[in-house]
Length: 165
Length: 165
Image (tube, rainbow over all chains, first blue to last red; front, side, top):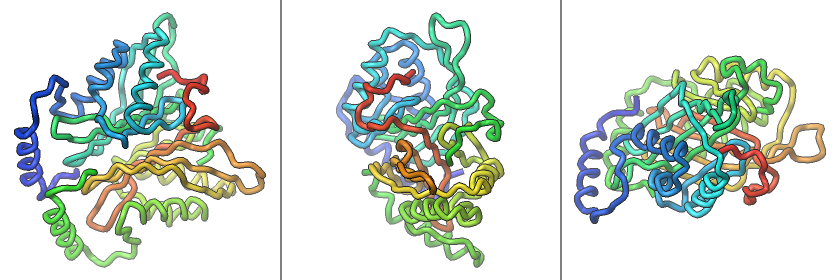
């Protein structure tokens, strides 16, 4: 869905912006999927610079870690990842159940993160995640990451006693 | 941000689609803000039909209630609201701290919901929420709602002991 008569104009605009950019060392992610892969690689590797290359440099980016507060703006988001990676905890993450809602300039990925913490024998309960990517002049970048712990049985909402709304 | 040279083409495409639509009784929301207002009105009134008028009729819509599983598709989303409204619990919701990330066809609103449950004297801890709206041929519709309980002090992430990542 979400494709239509804007495609040609939009692609032209995109190419024009790309040509006018100065040379930069930052990674370029040609698709939202590429940005998502880089996000989880950086998360598993606990590499702050690689993580922040995935994010748009924007004051309007948003990050909600599972159980955490809503963080807004590049500085808050960067600080949170620095804190998390600084803890020394290492994670293995298997992403599943992806639902994609994509437009020309924005893409929304809803996924489950299945997280194994190094040193623990059993996976944690899945995390329900919304990832949003923006097509910038320099490829796709993350602009929002919202994670929340999900019940063990993701397809049985009636079993969850905690639903407020 | 996110506006640009596509505006004229896109508005033309939108008008064309509107003219070709059959007459329908459903509400039309001219802006994402209008759809968001209708969402919270329906939630406070616990009116299922009004709630589902806000949502796009799409198999790719996603809803994560606070503490709940990720629901995907119109039927799962509708059933969850029917269950919630059927409980008889009534809510008053004050929305604050809105951050808007908008494109021509998609709009992402990050907000805090401050919820007072009828019969309770104190507000619950805030809920961090990501709402996503899609511009359809019949106005803006919600395509994703993701809520998760946030710590009481939304701007002090270091105080939260539950951050996994």
